[in-house]
Image (cartoon, rainbow, N blue to C red):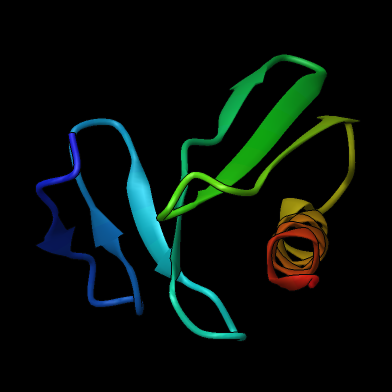
Length: 81
């Protein structure tokens, strides 16, 4: 699963999971999911020492601002010392 290819968006994608850079250095693994009305976002550091899961309502008029906010929350939780 951790054999990845370049996404050309700053991260890498493997078999169902993506590896994205952390602003504090290093990488985290993620796999978003959704069903009508709900979405989940998760992240775990490359070494497995930190993990975070967010669950939220996905009934919003514009998903992009929500996605940016959840990405920032995940990165903050994983970078916090």
